[in-house]
Image 1 (cartoon, helix red, strand yellow):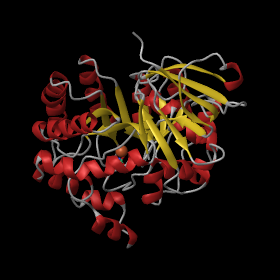
Image 2: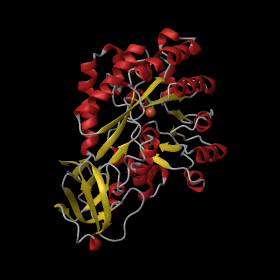
Image 3: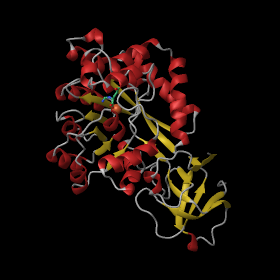
Image 4: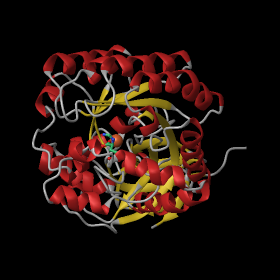
Length: 399
Ligand code: NIG
Ligand code: FE
């Protein structure tokens, strides 16, 4: 027998793509959206009325985070304020490698205890799906440890967690001068181990002067695809090296950061269906000045996602609605584009577009009700606490 129908009536609805012009009714059965129709057409629908009125969006999706990590880097933040660059700090053995030391030293329970409040903060902000990367372990065992913590968080909290293996994030000190040797380890030991344990949904690389070359990134992509895992990249963040073009060649899910992206690569991404993930928190924190080529992405129809990049260095920010505001003020997205970036397009960046990211029949009942008059207010005001109700897979969580 079917579970009873639940109804949300007279809703001002941003469905993930457009703001519906008339008040809408959303019907949910069990964990799925059953119907979405104008409330004037819903008179015959029987069911339990959950709510009348309010602004609804799809559950928000943070499609790029590094929220499992040990330690913190407040001192490095101060060094940067005094003039040191992100690259200077990386070359001196700090930056990502400082988090690697703290993450290796932490037990699985310690990592979990530190990560959980970060994820809870995202949930209070309306997030129903989050991606969590590894990349601060850089040994097989420490990478597996990070991914197990991410999966555990997904079992414990009402949120869909997608995990991404990012072994090629930085060169660990024990491989200094031997990046190709480390990539051998990533390809021949880490990816097979992660795939065998079912601990990753995708594979990411940091393709950059301070990280790995295009050729090294390509080897990682080949190993990932040999294990049936989709790929994505941190690319064109600090220079135009070619990581995004490589990602498009491998039909990658997304190329992320992309401040230095050029037009031929934008076209290649459009053809490949690769999402452009914008990370305004990292742009802001690192005081970058080169803005991603938003107009080219628009012209060529590349879907733009927006994410926190929540991590201890370049973006110590765990508030996705703040990213809506920053994507508009720093990158000049429209509020509607920014909202699409944390719903429909973020789902696509995770390969989840058939499951979540839109309010449409057949998709998971993931949505948020907000105490605002219109959806564009979410991008306009930086004001936590406006979430009234968060529905994840049909489960209702009052804020
Ligand atoms: O997305 N770009 C590389 N990786 C992360 C930063 C990680 C860190 O600084 O710890 C990023 O910005
Ligand atoms: Fe990142």
